[in-house]
Length: 368
Image (tube, rainbow, N blue to C red; front, side):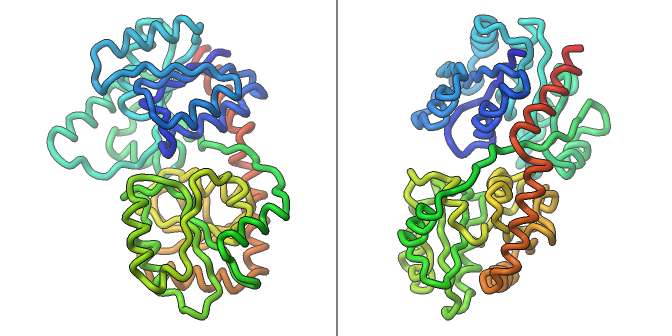
């Protein structure tokens, strides 16, 4: 089955980056993927990864709200023989619905975010328009968590066919112990010390300020190293704050941008996720896949991933976050039990092949 995924851009760090995981698993579900991005990105990491997996990628170089977008997308999909269009994020939803109508093929949309209240009247009008467009033109709307489905029903009403279908991630497999030790040595993790990792993109909504507030409260005697991976516009500010604060400078490390995420995760003892929102954070799914327990804020769909058997849920406050980090860092036996349970749950619910097969079943129903 030929499925075209339409995204606004393929810049790393966006919610649509999971397409690389889906592309790796798609052949086992009988899916042939193609990806069309409305805009062109200067960072070709995702583009290259998709092409290495044999997925055709087209970047159309369009500006937002370009009136030519629907026609250009329809032409690109027609050339590749797409049987169904799968859109991601609002701009792609609008353009993808119009292109699918032109091609006379069905379209489905994935909701990736739980959005805050619209800022003004114009924002409310835009959100209402997107909701109406999904209800009228999308054969299915996919929520990636139960919490997100309830949020969406709260703003859109009970109408529409909303399916809960969580994302998945590729199984990272075993990591070379020597490579794990090399990374821990590079990050200056002392003998008997613990490594806590935050892999969230460095954006304002990812909670790095709260994380650093919590790390400042960790007692100096605690043998803990905190690694900040990922990238984003907030990185220079974060680096400045850490450099200017003695307690942070002694234990916080910034990971080189080229470090392999899977190896980095497997080198950690716990994962930190302190965002104020999130429908189903992929960083937590990857932690589960690596068998690493998490300390995560109790927001959005996070409690559907992290529970007492796989990690620790905390409120959006520095002190409880610091307490949870210290307790888990000091208890390797508990970390091991949580990590085993997290890995087991990942294999049952969030492994990429199962995700692709569930999508295939949904597509079959739409085409039928």
